[in-house]
Length: 77
Image (cartoon, rainbow, N blue to C red):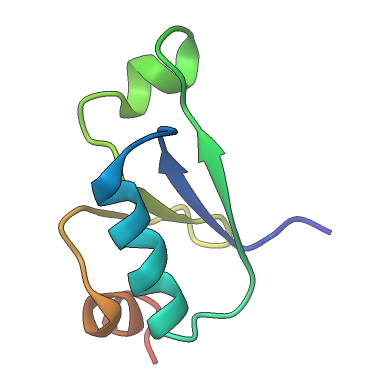
């Protein structure tokens, strides 16, 4: 079963850690993070807009900056 929320991030990114904290604080349910790296399709797509939260069910994306409240609004909670 696919995890419904994906946080696209990069390792060693302080703001990415803040995004993870926002997700945890929002009690958003199951989510996973994916390191987009520096090369390849994910880096091309998200490299300039890192810290993107994607709802796999709807295909909608929430770009940084966001906090726990913005995550809850995004998810319709």
